[in-house]
Each structure stands twice: as C-alpha cells, then as structure tokens.
Image (cartoon, rainbow over all chains, first blue to last red; front, side):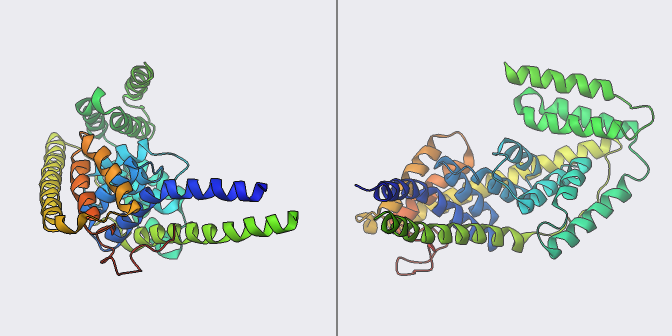
Length: 198
Length: 145
C-alpha cells in the first residue's frame, strides 16, 4: 500500500475523532451568535468534554456574556494558551473589566489593538480610554485593600481567581509612590504558586 | 507513481483545509457579532460598601445562572421525552454527542448536567444539534465528515 493511502487513512480517522467536539463547538457558536449564551455555554462545555482544546476559550466568552465574570476569568486562565486569538482576548479583557480587574483588562486590550479589525479596534480604544480616566488619579489604599480582601475571600479553592486579584493589587500598588502592600501581594502570590505546585 | 500518490494526498487534504477554515470563520463570526463595549463605566472600588455591593452582585449573578441552568436542563429533558419514539435510528454523530454528554453528566458541573439533557435531545433529533434545524436541513452542519 502506498504511503499516500496510509496517510489518507490516518487523516480520516483523526478527522472523524474530532467531529463530535467540532459539532458542539459549532452549535455553541450558532447559539452565541443568536445571543443565546446559556445554550451556547452548554454546547461549549460538551465540546470541552468531547476533547476540544479550544472550547474552554469559548466557554469563557459565553460566561462573560452571562455576567459570570469571575467564572469567565477562571475559564480563560485554565484554557490552552495556544488556542486563542485577538477576539477571544477581547472577551477575556471584558471579563477582567467586569470583575474590576482594570489593569488586567487594559493589558489584554493593548495586545488586541487592531488585530481583530476596525470595529473591535474602536471598541478597544473606547474601553481603554474609560479605564485611563478611572485610573487617572491613581488607586487609593482602600481600593488596593479591596483586591486583597477579594483574593482572601475566593481563597485557596479558586487559586486562578485569587491570583488574578492579587496580580491586580500588585499592579495597582506599582502606580503609587509608596507601593502600598506590594510586598503583601507578592508574598500571597508566591504562597498561592507554592500551594498550587504541591 | 509518486506523482500520482502526491495528487491523491492533495485531493484529500484540500477539502479538509477548506472545512477547517469554514469552522474557524463560523466561530470567529459568532464572537465578532456579539462583541460590545461594557455599559458600566469603570470605577475602582474604594469603600467597604462598594465591596459589599460587588459581592452581592456576584451572588445575584450566580443565583441567576443557577436558575437558567435548571430551566435549561428541564427544557432539554422535556425535549428528550417528546422525541423518544424517533430515537431508534441513531447516527454516529449523535452517538458521539451522547458519549460527550454522558461524560458531562458525570461531572459535578451544573452546566454539564444541562448538557447531558441537550445532547440526549440531539440524539432524539437523529443527530442534529439544537439550533441546526431538522434532519432535512443541510445547512445545519456545514462540514462533511
């Protein structure tokens, strides 16, 4: 048998293995497009269970649209870093924004830039401008305390989310001359990583 | 002979590439259509009351999500029951959906429980995923197998 035939057979079997997950991913995309985000989320979850590496990114986008920003942040953080594009990063940025992780959002939006076309680029500019205004006067100590408290509340059970709050606290500390509680944030992040690696 | 084999491989690969592009485009299109700017202006949390309000909002969203999931699972179960008679002829695609759903059902995740119902409904529709139209609708699944 020629090598081409073998290759064809191999490709056929691998293509059919991914079909189930792809179908659910596409069904999710159809629901998402129609604004039926709860149904889209279900399809993306099934696609994820069926082995789709990309599905978690889309589940994150659906969670963001459903207003479940913290769950969205966790989904995005747990997703395969190679399976995304600029548009998915835009949704990730919005999840950060909704959870008041404005520096996280701004960083992601900066990376999106105009990579997803002029309409998304205009949205990116609009959101970044709003964030710049909100951060213009710098964070108060109370604001930084809030992020630390939120990290404590979500605790060890939701390490990815706690880390997101602590990273925001650390980034906000850097905007202050006194670097308020920067050392606390670093220590807490280090602790989370140590616990996570055990 | 080698050239013939190469042509055969190319003939096989070209439709696969095109299908992958269609697939990517469909996903990208869905996200693009729904991309909007946030309606709430950004405000740094500055007081204890702001924190309390935020936590309360998050809890409210969580409760709303639970309610939506419960409703969705109920609807899916209803669809399964009403289509149970036509489920005898199950396509391979539907079986793969059911396997995924069964796996999902084993998970503690509430979304996945709803997914199980949805995939059973898929099976009952003879392999058509909800939102894709009936079995006679060729536009339901845009890619070949």
